[in-house]
Structure formats: structure tokens, C-alpha cells
Amino acid sequence: AQTVTQSQPEMSVQEAETVTLSCTYDTSESDYYLFWYKQPPSRQMILVIRQEAYKQQNATENRFSVNFQKAAKSFSLKISDSQLGDAAMYFCALGGNTPLVFGKGTRLSVIA
Amino acid sequence: GAGVSQSPSNKVTEKGKDVELRCDPISGHTALYWYRQSLGQGLEFLIYFQGNSAPDKSGLPSDRFSAERTGGSVSTLTIQRTQQEDSAVYLCASSLGAGGPVGTDTQYFGPGTRLTVL
Image (tube, each protein chain N blue to C red):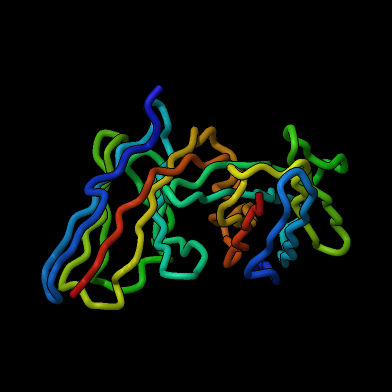
């Protein structure tokens, strides 16, 4: 079975600072994908970043980047220059031959 | 273009009633997914469609839950004889469904339906 663990229920960051959200996972598949989704109060999940496991290079999307440690089964999300609009729930997800499995999420607060 | 839409946005019902939740995927997306998000929890997979077929119904929590998709587009999730534990946000997502493994597609989500069972 595939599992995803987000060990930080809540995090906070000062505006313009950097924050890292952690995610660990377990899977028996050799080829899989990892995702970070953001869920603002509007409820609509938005893709933040996606990583293919066979690619060693860490994915980057503007202020968002990941630290993908395949051997450690770790997939953390770094948000640089945090903005008020980054405040949301962040979900880590794992997918492959089976449907996506999501972690329980980390609620990120951004302090002005 | 239009994103994934869901209706109704909110639904309040009485225990024992049946409810239907609707999802309109992004045009051209062949794969469609339903999830349930209970308060303070992550997303729980319910079912997915590739075209009109549902290869994986493993997440449906009981036989009170069913879903269908017609014309490779709109999908309806039906919950019969609702119970209080069915109260949750029901999210729908769609993806291109280009033929790769189900969990590798980028999924685009709708705003969800908040179901409250009194």
C-alpha cells in the first residue's frame, strides 16, 4: 500500500521569508509521481509542483521548489519569499499505477 | 477555458435522504475522479472514470455510494440513505487521461460540494 505522511499539521512563516513543508512517503512501485497541491479557503485544489521519480533533478516552479530524496522517500516543499497569498492548506500526494494518495495536509499561515 | 465545475456548492439534507452531486470536467479530459474530504483530513479516493468506464471503484465506502459518467463528460455521484458520517466536502477532478498510469496524470480540481447531513 502507498502511504503519505505530513508530520507538520501547522506551520507559520513571516512574509518574505522561506519555509519548508515536509512530506515522507512509502511505495513499492519503482516509477511514480509526487505532487504538492495547495488548497486555499475557496476549497479549490491547485497544483503547485509535480516531480517524476525517475528524474533526479528537483522540480522548480517560480518561488516553489522541492527537495526530492528518493532513497529517503522524502519530498519536501520549499516556498521562498513567502507572500500573504501563500496561506493555505498544502497537500503532498503520491501517484503511480494506483490512484493518488494524499497526506493529511499542512496548514500554512503567513504573518505580515 | 472553463475549469472543473461542481454543483451544488453546498447541500444540506436530512438523514436517510438520497443526494446527487454533479461534476462537469474540463472539456477534452477523459479521466474523472471523485474524492471525499472530511474535516481536518486529507483527500480520500472514491472512484475514477476513464471515459465512461470505472476501472477502480475500490474507494467507495459502502454500497450506498454509486457514480456514473455519461457521454465521457458529466459525472454524478449518488449517495443513498445518507448518514451523518457522510458529511464532508466531495471533490471532483479531471485529467487528460493520456493513457499512462492513473496516478501520474496532473489532476485539475473543482471547488467541491459541501454536504451536510442533519
